[in-house]
Amino acid sequence: MYRTSLATKLKLFSRFVRKFSFVCVSENQENLIVDVGKGKEVFPLVWLRDNCRCPSCFHKSSTSRIINWVDFNVSPKATSVQTTSDGNIVLQWNDKHISTFSLDWLKKRSFKEDAQQLYLHDNYRPTKVPWSCETFESIKKTYEYEDLLKSDEVLYNWLFDYARYGIVFINNVPDEKHAAAKLCKRIGVIKSTHYEEEFKIKHIPGTSNVAYLSDALQLHTDLPYYDYVPGVTILHCLIQTDGEGGDNLLVDGLYVAEKLRQENQEAFDLLSSVDVNWQDIGSEHGEKYHTILRCPVIKLDIHGNVDKIRQSGPQRDSHFTVNLKKVKPWYEAMKVFQKSITSESIKLKLRPGEILAIDNVRLIHGRSSYSDSANKKRLIIGIHLDWDDLFSRMRALKRKIDA
Image 1 (cartoon, rainbow, N blue to C red):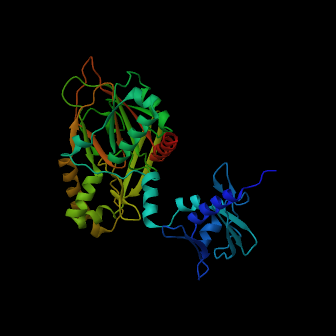
Image 2 (image 1 turned 90 degrees about the horizontal axis):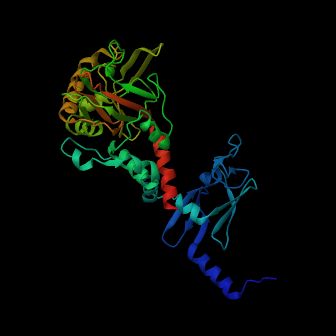
Image 3 (image 1 turned 180 degrees about the horizontal axis):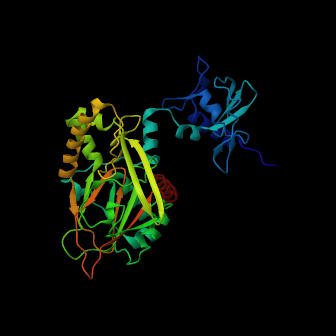
């Protein structure tokens, strides 16, 4: 029979002592305090009970909480706290339930602000980097199509740069109409709208979409009338006009919005609080549609950060359902914003075999007018996806690469 030697027991005890100086319940009976030698970690008891890892509370294979919240007690009491030599903390609750937590698991979920910020930085979403027309060349990133298909690490870097700057380029894309879709399916699920999954941007006389004309296309974001607006726009150039025009106009709406906040707070407040009626009416492939959404030009999150930009003159409805006193001030604020996005826009012309990927809830884009020739009729294949899928892919790739 195998017996643990005294030396091994002392080694295990020494390791245990290094892990814990002490563990106790706070005086108010609401927190667990763990001293790990480098300071105290505090964990609310209600959070610990909610996150019990036992099979009756947590489904391991689906990583899902299955605790019965109908009977959940938001003021649980721990009747005993014990520690084990392998670094676990065992809590017995006043309902006799027992929960076991490893110290490593707890430390990864620290409630200290610096630890939480580090977790969000590494796992939530990359920090966005605003850019101006003057700094665009310094942030411009270009990748090779085949590298993105073959290398997980290259794909991760491309997604990371895309999330940070809102724009990336891809070279040497095959002259095939489904080449962009092949790459997109490696990233996530193509989003279907009333313009199809793979929509052709070309001159179509009599169209109900101004993007399908060869006239100049005003600076805009795609589909501002969608509540769940696609965040990702992929544009694959198959055929480019051989004459003048057909240039892409691009501006970082995040940079412009933050610049407006600094220089004209009143205008910023109006554009981030007054709801605009965005609409699209028409038919595509025999199906009629009429979409409406009320949302400000600049949408803020609960922390006051710029979350989304919506801008499209053609899709701004004539119905402006706001207080009469806000109408003129809003137009004045919008004029300031329009001047800024125009002055900050950069111009470039996509080449056949090139993909332009833009953040559709950040980048405002347009196009100069062009004329097709008998031999060259401009054709761009467009695809939309959701940022949720791209962020998910990033995290999965990071876990795979780190392993």
